[in-house]
Picture 1 (spheres, rainbow, N blue to C red):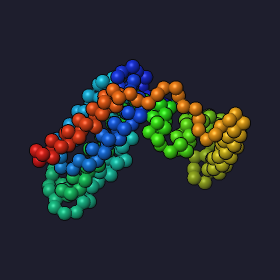
Picture 2 (picture 1 turned 45 degrees about the horizontal axis):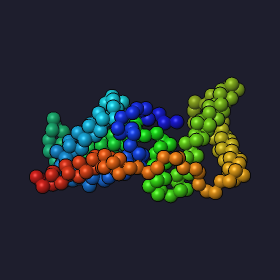
Picture 3 (picture 1 turned 180 degrees about the vertical axis):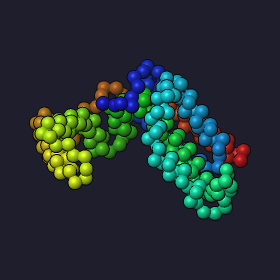
Picture 4 (picture 1 turned 90 degrees about the vertical axis):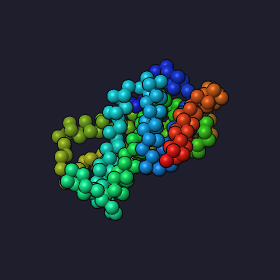
Length: 249
């Protein structure tokens, strides 16, 4: 299950997941550390992501459609110029806070770049490969194990919830108001208990088959040096843009 993944054979798709995770993380760090006044630097970061999207053959429309996940933060950013303090400027009859405008730009620019980088990572890497990549990066085992089980059983839980909803509807109960949600609350509790019991049974079955706290790892080895070099192009280029913008400022 990975609705964000786009199957492909591009050079970005073929990179080892741990190399892509580190590249995106370092790129995001550079973006976050960039002063909000460096408008040219943010434009350069956007160009870098556009190049990665082109190499990975990820359609621009696909990316733009999924950036709507940041809409709540964009709405917050839109309010900042109106309620900010300090010096103000007039624009189209509106009195806007200069500090608020900078704050809104900071949220929008860095948030959008971070979302786009994450979407490119998800589009070129399956959820299972991401977990294996985190495991190779020495992410705590308990976290990767929980993520693995979540990935494996989330479809089962969704199917259980769907069947329980159908059962409620078949009995004529279709709550539409707050005071009618008793059946829904009872269903959530039953789903939790059923999931807990299933987890216990699965765990006991795994112990009987020799589980010792770690699932088998895939046969593929860690990322090669050339993969690290290729993936480092994004954060290194971003760092170069940041340094150039700081020098020319």
